Picture 1: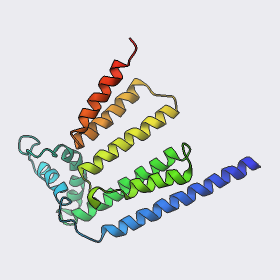
Picture 2 (picture 1 turned 90 degrees about the horizontal axis):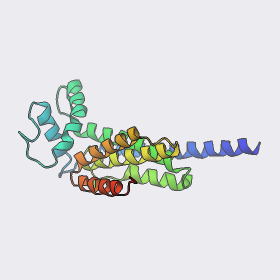
Picture 3 (picture 1 turned 120 degrees about the vertical axis):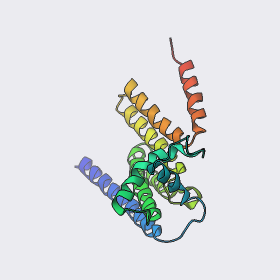
Length: 204
């Protein structure tokens, strides 16, 4: 009986945490309809639009942040295919940002609730959900970079818990980190350094 009561208590705590995260998401969605950023938010969608219209990476574009734009092309193409224009793209980007952040915040909470405690895991999830570089809720290279790193970390912890880390899993994790480096080029230096250290510690 005590086991079932404890289980029920955990379920109630989880429901409360999910409700708090959902409320936070609702607040972010409401915020999407207010404010205008005069700096980079509109820039995030210009290079992907050029690629959709036929420009080629590297050949027609010299901006150092262009590589993340390739990852944004499917999202932007879907929007333009439905609307027929770019009107509303800022709001669309903000809403996509909220959805991505919410999904990953749930993953953060579920991953860390047993490792630390539910309250601390909820705080970590809320920090991830609310964190926006420059207070810009847009699909930027900063956002995609942090998303891929978070996904890699969550998958690594999951595979490790399942005791199923195989070469294919390591390859998948490396591929995801490669996507992070595609969004934030200098991160490739950390990947290279980590790979050299890992290889040097392998037992022959």
